[in-house]
Image (cartoon, rainbow, N blue to C red; front, side, top):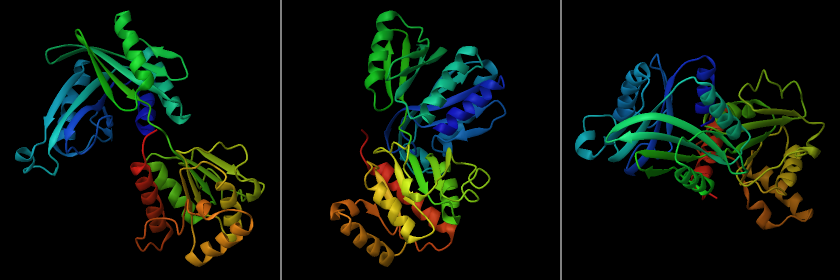
Length: 350
C-alpha cells in the first residue's frame, strides 16, 4: 500500500491524473480481496495489482478512457467457473471495482500526501472516498482522510448527518466498508497496519532480505555496528539505517510492537545472543534468528542461565525461514521473507 500512496503523490506532484482502482466488495473465490488497489496512469502503466487476468485487464482498459474523460466508474466482474475457463484465472466469484479518477488538485495532493505519511508513520485512520451515483453512473468523487487520533483532511461533501455517520464508522473500521446514502456512496478504507522488519546485521543475507521485505510491503530498518556495511548505498530500500556503537544497545530508541518483525542476522553467535536477549524483552510479533540448530541450542542454554524461560525461547523462529533448502543469500532471503509473509497473513487482525 505504501507503494500505491507514494506513486499517487508522485503523479499528483507532476500534475498527472490517474485512476485508483480498488476492489470495494467481493464474494466467493476472487484473486484479491476488498481493499486491494492498483494505479493506472494516463499512459497505461499499472502500479500494484487487483488480481491480474480478465479482472485487471478490464479495469485497466476502462481506466484509460476514464482518465481521458475525467470521470470515475464502478465495474462488476463475474468470475464464475463458466466464464473463467477461457482465461488465465482459476477462481470463481464476484468482485466490484471502483475506478476513481484522481485529478491533480491541491486538495487531492494534500489528502494523498497525508495518507502516505500516515502509512509511513504507522498512524491509524481511514481513507474515505465519496461519490454521487445514479443507477450505474458515478459522479464526482471526493476524498477525505480521518485519523483515529483526531483530525480530518479533505471534504466528504455530504450532508452533515451523513458525514457524521461516515466518520463515526471510519473511527472503528477494521476492513473496507461501504455506506450507501441517498444518491451517494462512501467507501471507507482503514489504513492498513504497516509492519516494520527490524534487521540486525547488514551482511549479504541482510542485504537480500531487506530488498525482498521492502518489495512485499514491509517497512525495513537495518542496524549494524559497521558503517561500511550499514549504509544507504547497500540498503537503498530501507526506511531506516542505524549504525550502532555496539549490539549491546541494539534497541535503543526503538518502540517495537506486536505488528513488528525482528530478524537477527549478525556476523557471529555472540552478537546474535546479545540481540536475541534484548528482542525477547520486546512485544514483537515475530523474532527470527539465523543459524544452525546447534548454534541455536547453545544460545538458548546461555539464555536459560540468565533467567529466560522455555516460553521465552519458544517465541523464536530458528533456524529462521521456511525449510526450502536455501543456500545462497538470495535463497535464504526468500525463505525468511516467505516465513514473515506466512506469519503476517495468518495472525489475527487487532
